Image (cartoon, rainbow, N blue to C red; front, side, top):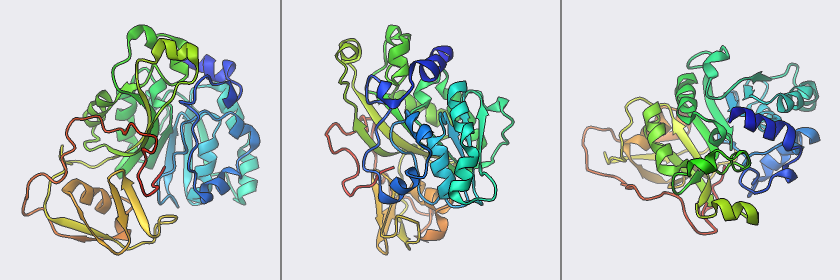
Length: 349
């Protein structure tokens, strides 16, 4: 299937308009600062972009970031601008044609950003075989991926490799496509359905279990929306399955609990995170207003206190006393089914 995907993205697709569905190309609700950053990306790089959304977590300046399935390099170059010259970005992709586009514009972007040296590097490889690329353990602050993990034939290995490469307190922040049930094998084997980011999608509950098995013990859903399949031929084949585009953040923190437990803890957001001055969105259920006491479970407290977000919060309480479950989400499907399925206050990715 890797060869089929390389052929689809390297030879069949020449522009985002060549996609048969919108599953892999869905930029919505992009804030102004990201639109400005996108405008600084070379036209050819943008034209060969096939991601689902724009994967940009908060507080990026000075960070070392790895992009899994970087394609033509669009997201890498946006990240390179946002991390600044002291930060760095590494993109990994397996498709020669995409890497050729990405590498062709390294100097163009360095000059455009006014940097003395390029802070972007592209490597050819498979995202499930990152151990073959000479990347050091515990060396990245953030790993991102944009509608690519569904294309991997070994998704558990992708998650395991990401966990290995992240620094303690680092996070895997990524958008991808998920299904409400397991996809039948004959559909998984179809190269067009697979290349369109549909038949390779993980059943959402299988994803949660794989993430936990890899070490990401409390996956947090940031944003989601249902996908529409407007292509009649494709809908006739796979339209009995509901698909969702979703963004998750997975923190590398040892010892997180399996559920949200209440210890009477709380945080206060002090502000200071760029482009999130008044409100900070941790995930779909945690939009934290500046200056207001915000009760949190033990896991959430650790995610904020043991990550790059720690300087921007005040922390109250400890884990000496347990008060029971804090917010048991149960085992129901986490995705919304309505049209306005992102956080009501506009938190995006």
